[in-house]
Length: 87
Figure 1 (spheres, rainbow, N blue to C red):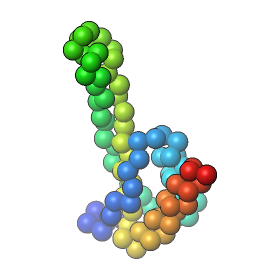
Figure 2 (spheres, one colour):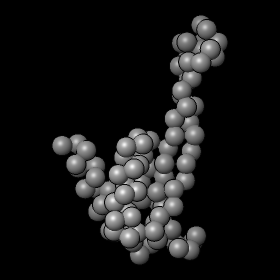
Figure 3 (tube, rainbow, N blue to C red):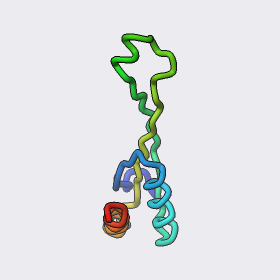
């Protein structure tokens, strides 16, 4: 997988969705890379009132990148996973 030929397919923040996508990509033999971004969720009211006494939550965003040639299959897989989660 060449760096300049990777395309972002989806970004999710739910670890269950992340795992389902990973399993599906492996099952279909799609090479992928994940970029993980840490996001601090601050509760503005609690922060102002209490300071930062553990009220801030750490959340992660997972962005999936695949080879250009696998993009269509990856999109189809992601759509089917999202459909099954919404049903």
